[in-house]
Image 1 (cartoon, protein in one colour):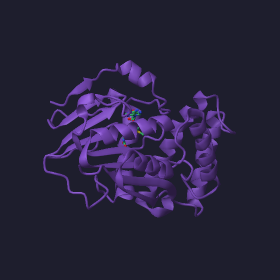
Image 2 (tube, rainbow, N blue to C red):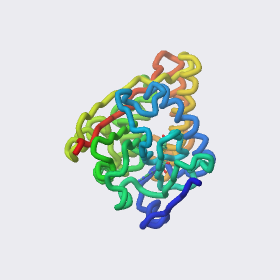
Image 3 (tube, helix red, strand yellow):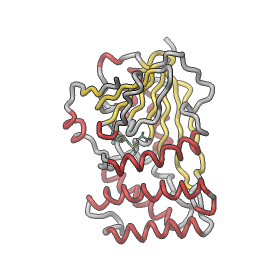
Image 4 (cartoon, rainbow, N blue to C red):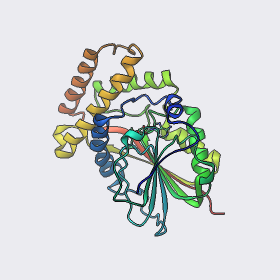
Length: 286
Ligand SMILES: C[S@@+](CC[C@H](N)C(=O)[O-])C[C@H]1O[C@@H](n2cnc3c(N)ncnc32)[C@H](O)[C@@H]1O
Protein backbone atom coordinates (compact mmCIF):
# COMPACT_ATOMS: atom_id res chain seq x y z
CA UNK A 1 0.00 0.00 0.00
CA UNK A 2 1.18 3.51 -0.74
CA UNK A 3 1.60 5.50 2.45
CA UNK A 4 1.02 9.13 3.32
CA UNK A 5 3.22 10.03 6.27
CA UNK A 6 3.01 13.37 8.06
CA UNK A 7 6.41 14.01 9.53
CA UNK A 8 7.39 16.14 12.55
CA UNK A 9 5.97 19.40 11.10
CA UNK A 10 2.17 19.49 10.94
CA UNK A 11 0.50 19.67 7.53
CA UNK A 12 -0.89 23.07 8.50
CA UNK A 13 2.51 24.51 9.42
CA UNK A 14 4.12 23.13 6.25
CA UNK A 15 1.50 24.87 4.08
CA UNK A 16 1.26 28.13 6.00
CA UNK A 17 5.04 28.65 6.07
CA UNK A 18 5.20 28.24 2.29
CA UNK A 19 5.16 31.16 -0.17
CA UNK A 20 3.85 28.86 -2.94
CA UNK A 21 2.05 31.41 -5.09
CA UNK A 22 -0.15 28.86 -6.89
CA UNK A 23 -2.62 27.97 -4.18
CA UNK A 24 -4.70 25.49 -6.18
CA UNK A 25 -4.75 21.99 -4.74
CA UNK A 26 -7.96 20.42 -6.08
CA UNK A 27 -9.15 18.70 -9.26
CA UNK A 28 -8.57 21.66 -11.66
CA UNK A 29 -4.93 21.79 -10.50
CA UNK A 30 -4.61 18.00 -10.97
CA UNK A 31 -5.95 18.41 -14.52
CA UNK A 32 -3.53 21.30 -15.19
CA UNK A 33 -0.52 19.33 -13.95
CA UNK A 34 -1.59 16.21 -15.88
CA UNK A 35 -1.80 18.27 -19.09
CA UNK A 36 1.54 20.01 -18.70
CA UNK A 37 3.57 17.03 -17.49
CA UNK A 38 3.77 15.17 -20.85
CA UNK A 39 4.53 18.45 -22.62
CA UNK A 40 7.63 19.14 -20.53
CA UNK A 41 8.63 15.46 -20.49
CA UNK A 42 8.62 15.33 -24.29
CA UNK A 43 10.02 18.72 -25.18
CA UNK A 44 12.39 19.45 -22.31
CA UNK A 45 13.57 15.90 -21.54
CA UNK A 46 13.18 14.04 -24.86
CA UNK A 47 10.67 11.74 -23.09
CA UNK A 48 13.30 10.55 -20.58
CA UNK A 49 12.37 10.55 -16.88
CA UNK A 50 16.09 10.71 -16.17
CA UNK A 51 17.33 13.49 -18.41
CA UNK A 52 20.99 12.49 -18.45
CA UNK A 53 21.05 9.35 -20.60
CA UNK A 54 24.48 8.39 -19.19
CA UNK A 55 23.05 7.84 -15.68
CA UNK A 56 22.44 4.17 -14.93
CA UNK A 57 20.66 3.61 -11.63
CA UNK A 58 20.97 0.39 -9.61
CA UNK A 59 18.02 -2.00 -10.13
CA UNK A 60 16.70 -1.39 -6.60
CA UNK A 61 17.23 2.37 -6.78
CA UNK A 62 15.54 4.72 -4.32
CA UNK A 63 14.18 7.91 -5.91
CA UNK A 64 12.71 11.11 -4.52
CA UNK A 65 10.37 13.38 -6.48
CA UNK A 66 10.27 16.77 -4.76
CA UNK A 67 7.04 18.78 -5.22
CA UNK A 68 5.56 15.69 -6.81
CA UNK A 69 2.02 17.08 -7.29
CA UNK A 70 0.13 14.37 -9.17
CA UNK A 71 3.29 12.21 -9.29
CA UNK A 72 3.95 10.79 -12.74
CA UNK A 73 7.25 9.02 -12.08
CA UNK A 74 6.19 5.46 -11.34
CA UNK A 75 9.25 3.22 -11.66
CA UNK A 76 9.00 -0.53 -11.83
CA UNK A 77 11.70 -2.09 -9.71
CA UNK A 78 12.73 1.15 -8.00
CA UNK A 79 11.24 2.67 -4.87
CA UNK A 80 9.79 6.13 -5.30
CA UNK A 81 9.15 8.61 -2.51
CA UNK A 82 7.10 11.63 -3.53
CA UNK A 83 6.87 14.67 -1.29
CA UNK A 84 4.58 17.66 -1.53
CA UNK A 85 3.20 20.29 0.82
CA UNK A 86 -0.32 19.37 -0.43
CA UNK A 87 -1.37 15.74 0.02
CA UNK A 88 -4.60 16.41 -1.93
CA UNK A 89 -2.75 16.14 -5.25
CA UNK A 90 -1.34 12.65 -4.63
CA UNK A 91 -2.76 9.99 -6.97
CA UNK A 92 -4.07 6.60 -5.85
CA UNK A 93 -1.08 4.30 -6.08
CA UNK A 94 -2.47 1.30 -4.21
CA UNK A 95 -1.38 -0.83 -7.19
CA UNK A 96 2.21 0.37 -6.71
CA UNK A 97 3.57 -0.92 -3.37
CA UNK A 98 6.95 0.66 -4.11
CA UNK A 99 5.54 4.23 -4.19
CA UNK A 100 5.26 6.25 -0.98
CA UNK A 101 3.93 9.77 -0.49
CA UNK A 102 4.79 12.14 2.34
CA UNK A 103 3.36 15.54 3.14
CA UNK A 104 6.68 17.26 3.53
CA UNK A 105 8.60 20.34 2.42
CA UNK A 106 11.86 19.90 0.51
CA UNK A 107 13.36 22.50 2.86
CA UNK A 108 13.13 20.16 5.86
CA UNK A 109 13.43 16.42 5.25
CA UNK A 110 13.39 13.64 7.88
CA UNK A 111 16.72 13.23 9.73
CA UNK A 112 16.78 9.48 9.01
CA UNK A 113 16.77 10.02 5.23
CA UNK A 114 20.49 10.94 5.18
CA UNK A 115 22.46 9.19 2.38
CA UNK A 116 19.40 7.13 1.34
CA UNK A 117 18.56 8.20 -2.23
CA UNK A 118 20.12 7.38 -5.61
CA UNK A 119 18.27 10.07 -7.53
CA UNK A 120 16.27 13.22 -6.75
CA UNK A 121 14.07 15.01 -9.26
CA UNK A 122 12.44 18.40 -8.74
CA UNK A 123 10.25 19.98 -11.42
CA UNK A 124 8.69 23.45 -11.52
CA UNK A 125 9.24 24.68 -7.96
CA UNK A 126 10.33 28.23 -8.81
CA UNK A 127 6.84 29.51 -7.85
CA UNK A 128 7.30 27.90 -4.42
CA UNK A 129 10.76 28.48 -2.98
CA UNK A 130 12.24 31.78 -1.84
CA UNK A 131 15.92 32.37 -2.57
CA UNK A 132 16.82 31.38 1.02
CA UNK A 133 14.68 28.24 0.75
CA UNK A 134 16.50 27.15 -2.40
CA UNK A 135 19.73 26.96 -0.42
CA UNK A 136 18.00 24.97 2.33
CA UNK A 137 16.45 22.64 -0.26
CA UNK A 138 19.74 22.01 -2.05
CA UNK A 139 21.50 21.37 1.25
CA UNK A 140 18.80 18.86 2.22
CA UNK A 141 19.04 17.14 -1.18
CA UNK A 142 22.82 16.84 -0.77
CA UNK A 143 22.30 15.30 2.69
CA UNK A 144 19.77 12.68 1.61
CA UNK A 145 21.60 11.59 -1.57
CA UNK A 146 23.92 8.60 -1.34
CA UNK A 147 27.52 9.36 -2.34
CA UNK A 148 27.50 9.24 -6.16
CA UNK A 149 23.74 10.00 -6.25
CA UNK A 150 22.26 12.38 -8.80
CA UNK A 151 19.87 15.34 -8.77
CA UNK A 152 17.88 16.85 -11.63
CA UNK A 153 16.02 20.17 -11.60
CA UNK A 154 13.65 21.23 -14.41
CA UNK A 155 12.34 24.73 -14.10
CA UNK A 156 11.85 28.18 -15.56
CA UNK A 157 14.39 30.97 -15.32
CA UNK A 158 11.94 33.83 -14.78
CA UNK A 159 14.33 36.43 -16.22
CA UNK A 160 14.52 34.48 -19.46
CA UNK A 161 11.06 32.91 -19.66
CA UNK A 162 9.10 34.18 -22.65
CA UNK A 163 5.86 32.31 -23.40
CA UNK A 164 6.02 33.79 -26.89
CA UNK A 165 8.60 35.79 -28.82
CA UNK A 166 6.32 38.82 -29.17
CA UNK A 167 4.86 41.72 -27.17
CA UNK A 168 2.50 39.49 -25.12
CA UNK A 169 5.47 37.35 -24.05
CA UNK A 170 7.46 40.42 -22.99
CA UNK A 171 4.55 41.79 -20.98
CA UNK A 172 4.04 38.47 -19.18
CA UNK A 173 7.78 38.22 -18.48
CA UNK A 174 7.80 41.65 -16.85
CA UNK A 175 4.73 40.81 -14.76
CA UNK A 176 6.24 37.54 -13.57
CA UNK A 177 9.45 39.28 -12.53
CA UNK A 178 7.39 41.75 -10.49
CA UNK A 179 5.60 38.79 -8.85
CA UNK A 180 8.95 37.09 -8.11
CA UNK A 181 10.26 40.28 -6.49
CA UNK A 182 7.18 40.58 -4.26
CA UNK A 183 7.62 37.02 -2.93
CA UNK A 184 11.46 36.85 -2.92
CA UNK A 185 11.28 34.03 -5.49
CA UNK A 186 14.40 33.16 -7.45
CA UNK A 187 14.39 35.08 -10.78
CA UNK A 188 17.62 33.59 -12.21
CA UNK A 189 17.29 29.80 -11.76
CA UNK A 190 19.74 28.93 -14.57
CA UNK A 191 22.59 30.92 -12.97
CA UNK A 192 21.84 30.77 -9.24
CA UNK A 193 21.14 27.04 -8.86
CA UNK A 194 24.45 25.95 -10.49
CA UNK A 195 26.26 28.47 -8.23
CA UNK A 196 24.56 27.07 -5.11
CA UNK A 197 25.11 23.45 -6.18
CA UNK A 198 28.83 24.11 -6.54
CA UNK A 199 28.98 25.93 -3.20
CA UNK A 200 27.29 22.99 -1.43
CA UNK A 201 29.73 20.47 -2.93
CA UNK A 202 27.98 18.95 -5.96
CA UNK A 203 30.04 17.97 -9.03
CA UNK A 204 29.38 17.42 -12.74
CA UNK A 205 26.92 20.31 -12.94
CA UNK A 206 25.26 20.66 -16.36
CA UNK A 207 22.77 23.26 -17.60
CA UNK A 208 20.61 22.77 -20.71
CA UNK A 209 17.76 24.67 -22.27
CA UNK A 210 15.32 24.01 -25.13
CA UNK A 211 12.93 26.18 -27.14
CA UNK A 212 9.50 24.65 -26.47
CA UNK A 213 6.88 24.36 -29.26
CA UNK A 214 4.05 26.76 -28.42
CA UNK A 215 1.68 28.12 -31.06
CA UNK A 216 -0.95 26.48 -33.26
CA UNK A 217 1.10 27.02 -36.42
CA UNK A 218 3.45 24.34 -34.98
CA UNK A 219 0.80 21.62 -35.19
CA UNK A 220 -0.43 19.31 -32.41
CA UNK A 221 2.58 19.94 -30.15
CA UNK A 222 2.13 23.69 -30.57
CA UNK A 223 -1.57 23.49 -29.66
CA UNK A 224 -0.69 21.43 -26.58
CA UNK A 225 1.92 24.09 -25.71
CA UNK A 226 -0.65 26.88 -26.04
CA UNK A 227 -2.95 25.13 -23.56
CA UNK A 228 -0.09 24.65 -21.09
CA UNK A 229 0.96 28.32 -21.32
CA UNK A 230 -2.61 29.65 -21.12
CA UNK A 231 -3.29 27.54 -18.02
CA UNK A 232 -0.14 28.99 -16.46
CA UNK A 233 -1.36 32.54 -17.13
CA UNK A 234 -4.58 31.58 -15.40
CA UNK A 235 -2.96 30.31 -12.19
CA UNK A 236 -0.57 33.26 -12.03
CA UNK A 237 -3.58 35.55 -12.50
CA UNK A 238 -4.78 34.38 -9.07
CA UNK A 239 -1.36 35.10 -7.56
CA UNK A 240 -1.23 38.62 -9.02
CA UNK A 241 -4.83 39.56 -8.17
CA UNK A 242 -4.36 38.39 -4.58
CA UNK A 243 -1.69 41.12 -4.33
CA UNK A 244 -4.20 43.68 -5.66
CA UNK A 245 -2.58 43.59 -9.11
CA UNK A 246 0.91 44.32 -10.41
CA UNK A 247 2.10 46.65 -13.15
CA UNK A 248 -0.87 47.21 -15.48
CA UNK A 249 -2.48 43.84 -14.67
CA UNK A 250 -5.13 44.75 -12.11
CA UNK A 251 -8.30 42.90 -13.12
CA UNK A 252 -9.53 39.68 -14.71
CA UNK A 253 -10.04 41.66 -17.88
CA UNK A 254 -6.38 42.66 -17.94
CA UNK A 255 -5.51 38.96 -17.88
CA UNK A 256 -7.95 38.20 -20.67
CA UNK A 257 -6.20 40.90 -22.71
CA UNK A 258 -2.81 39.40 -21.84
CA UNK A 259 -3.95 35.90 -22.91
CA UNK A 260 -5.32 37.40 -26.16
CA UNK A 261 -2.05 39.18 -26.89
CA UNK A 262 -0.14 35.90 -26.39
CA UNK A 263 -2.49 34.20 -28.86
CA UNK A 264 -1.83 37.02 -31.34
CA UNK A 265 1.92 36.47 -30.91
CA UNK A 266 1.61 32.73 -31.54
CA UNK A 267 -0.55 33.30 -34.60
CA UNK A 268 1.78 35.95 -36.02
CA UNK A 269 5.16 34.27 -36.23
CA UNK A 270 6.31 34.65 -32.61
CA UNK A 271 5.84 30.97 -31.69
CA UNK A 272 7.87 29.09 -29.12
CA UNK A 273 8.51 29.47 -25.39
CA UNK A 274 12.01 29.99 -24.01
CA UNK A 275 13.66 30.11 -20.60
CA UNK A 276 13.03 26.52 -19.42
CA UNK A 277 16.12 24.69 -18.16
CA UNK A 278 17.30 21.29 -16.92
CA UNK A 279 20.13 21.36 -14.39
CA UNK A 280 21.80 18.09 -13.35
CA UNK A 281 24.49 17.42 -10.73
CA UNK A 282 26.10 14.59 -8.76
CA UNK A 283 27.08 14.20 -5.11
CA UNK A 284 30.73 13.13 -5.06
CA UNK A 285 31.41 9.46 -4.35
CA UNK A 286 32.84 8.86 -0.89
C1 LIG B 1 3.96 23.59 -10.36
S1 LIG B 1 3.66 22.18 -9.37
C2 LIG B 1 4.68 20.94 -10.17
C3 LIG B 1 4.24 19.54 -9.82
C4 LIG B 1 5.07 18.42 -10.47
N1 LIG B 1 6.47 18.53 -10.08
C5 LIG B 1 4.93 18.41 -11.97
O1 LIG B 1 5.90 18.73 -12.66
O2 LIG B 1 3.82 18.09 -12.45
C6 LIG B 1 4.62 22.52 -7.88
C7 LIG B 1 4.34 21.51 -6.77
O3 LIG B 1 5.26 21.77 -5.70
C8 LIG B 1 4.56 21.67 -4.46
N2 LIG B 1 5.33 22.42 -3.45
C9 LIG B 1 5.28 23.73 -3.21
N3 LIG B 1 6.15 24.07 -2.24
C10 LIG B 1 6.79 22.94 -1.88
C11 LIG B 1 7.81 22.63 -0.93
N4 LIG B 1 8.36 23.59 -0.14
N5 LIG B 1 8.22 21.35 -0.81
C12 LIG B 1 7.69 20.38 -1.59
N6 LIG B 1 6.70 20.59 -2.50
C13 LIG B 1 6.27 21.86 -2.65
C14 LIG B 1 3.18 22.19 -4.79
O4 LIG B 1 2.20 21.81 -3.87
C15 LIG B 1 2.94 21.63 -6.19
O5 LIG B 1 2.35 20.35 -6.15
